Amino acid sequence: MMCSGRVDLGFVFRALSNGADGVFIGGCHLNDCHYNTGGNYHAVNMVLLVKRILAHIGLNPDRLRLESVSAGEGIRFAEITNDFAQEVKELGPLGKGEGIDKEILQLKLEAVTQLIPFIKVVLNERLRVRFGTVEEYEEFYASEELDRLFRELIADKLAISQIMSVLREKPLSTAEISNTIGLAQSEVARHLSDSAKHGLVRYEEDLERFVIV
Image 1 (cartoon, rainbow, N blue to C red):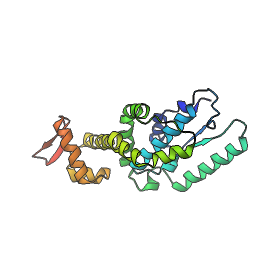
Image 2 (image 1 turned 90 degrees about the horizontal axis):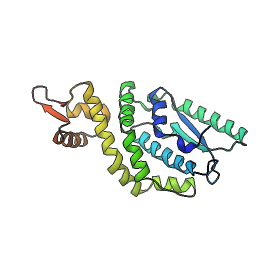
Image 3 (image 1 turned 30 degrees about the horizontal axis):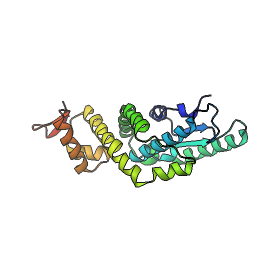
Image 4 (image 1 turned 90 degrees about the vertical axis):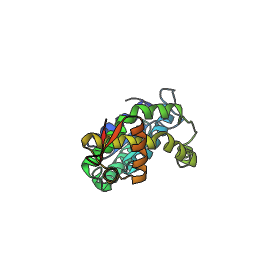
């Protein structure tokens, strides 16, 4: 048993990459931390960010659940886990339930995994917030401020990471990349242009495709 605040976001994506269809995290009730560190507040913040990332890459955020359960709530714990297991079963296998091809799913998860060290920095330095209730955290993650921060700090880098992942497989055109990762061609073109300026990719005229440098 460990503090829910020590559950790294990398653990979640590792579980999903290894075939888990859902991830459940149980922690202490807020204001009732066994380790007096407030780690359960960090867990709420982390889980809501991961849910946002899951939705961004096309996965149902309900595949991740955080519940506050004390050591004396054995019956409630059993009810919650049974309910979550049933919910995940209804969602179907990861990716298949969302209509995402298995190879594309792995590509998207790989792109996120490669960004985890950066996302941790963003979480600790730019998104470290402390509220008194789960509802307040949820309100923050539904706010325009969070939308802006997510776009600026995470979304663009996730798009670039996905683009680089598909280009490692083979040279592709802007349209082919767009169809593969589900991003608008205009956005793909913008990221390819920026990546080319930084010497990460180049356009091969004979192939009419982009390649990694």
